[in-house]
Length: 570
Image (cartoon, one colour):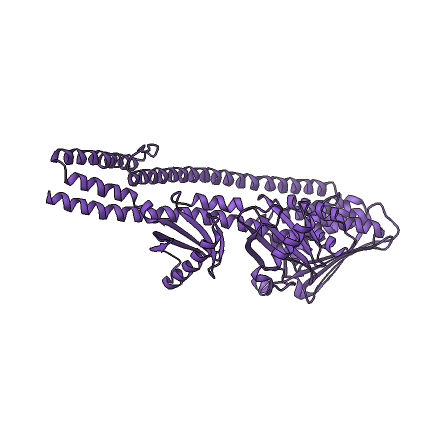
């Protein structure tokens, strides 16, 4: 019987340690999942708020003192669809003059409660209104009538245009989304989980008893401060009971996840084992034999299955899985091994698919090299045929077309190229278009020497020159056609001006073209494409202007920022 006593003590200790380890592993996995989803939500909210707050149409409406509530509601709904809002939100705009606009109807009391809620946020006192980069998030009670239980997540972003504060964009995310995440992270039904900030203030919890949880949040922050670690676990006293305290700092959000599980619930399996062992001590050896037999069936058989599974894995067979129902620890182990095999099999399939895609891309790349080569050889043959016919205009046109295609096909994966390469390309393009429209075009290049090696996006000048030829010169013979390209250094970086002395446009036509370019619609999609590519490549400091006058001509003006070291790299 003495060995049985020692065995009971050993089982108790081992089972307690196993439960501690499995509990911490289980909580860690749940927190990883929770953190991933929370980061995804916050990234989506941040991307949406930054895009919407920087939208030109929204800024225009907020600057318009005669705007109507209907116009703002339509704009909010359109922008929500435009920037792919995928989370159910209440979208509000608190205009600088104090008006409130929302994608849901609000009464006066709800508007006042919303304004009061925003005013009470901790960050509001230090908010620099002209700072358009800062992104705030906080939890507060619902302002609707009747209010929803629990705290709601509020995300705020300043709306600034041309250094002027236009208002505050406020997004309200429903409490139920985060509450469901917290409920999924609970280890047991009796577990309490909550989020707090780095000052110990309670943000949101699975239990609506905010008074008790607020104090627990403060106490938790004190424990975390003493431990000086980003995660940990220990036993604490709360509500007169022993609880297993586990915390994990979420660094990207500056929040801390806290989980409190009653010790008696967590160690219920261990207590059962202890009671069974004590009973076994007072019964006959037969009962002890039966007990050990059952224990063997519960542990040894699954281990044998694990061993068989490992042997199959070594031979490359990953389709077998373990089906087991019994001891919690073994179930967790079986579930973990099955999940690991699923991930390995998925990764193998992904690698195979990526390898197939790589081979397909390589074939496509080789095929793409054949087509330009064939076209260039064909043009060279046509050129020699024209030489034999002594057709000089056709020869010159084919030479220019060959140079155009060579530039277009050369290094298609390169986004930026020196300005000089673009100018060489434009010379050949203008020569080719002279043959097309049967009209001479005088090309004037006023280029500062320091600007020739500045990199700009490829195919930037061609759509602008094409616009000048087909909309300015073609079918218009009042004077000699002159196309001027000017490049000079400016305070912003590189200033480019493409001007012509063609037919020009009226003020209404000029405004309509500006709108087409801004909205990427209309017939002149090439111009809009150039402007959008420059915005994406050069950032917010890029500037564009269009000037035109009927019977005088048209000028496209660009201010392109130059990063430090950009010229030297070339």
